[in-house]
Length: 99
Image (cartoon, rainbow, N blue to C red; front, side, top):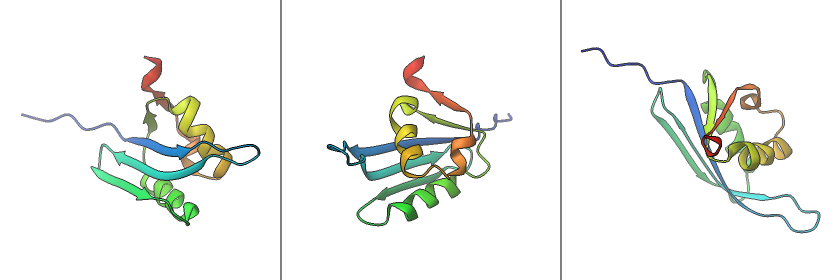
C-alpha cells in the first residue's frame, strides 16, 4: 500500500510577551514543524532572536506554505515587524483559526 506524501508545510507558533508603550512584542519561544521532513524546531529565545529566526527561516526552505493557528493576526505580523527579510514571508499562508 502506498502512503500519500505529507504536504510541504512549515507550521509555526510564537510565544510572546506583549510590548508596552513604544516597545515591540518580545518573542521568548519559537516553535516549528516541517510535516514532510518531520524536522522539529523549538528554541527558547533569551538574547539571540536573530539566530533563532534565521534557523526558523532555514527550516522553511522548500516548504510550499506556512500553517498556524491565528498566524495571520498574531505570529506573522510580529515576525514581519521584527524580521521582514525572512523568506518565509513569501509563502502562502493557511490560518486554522479562519476555518
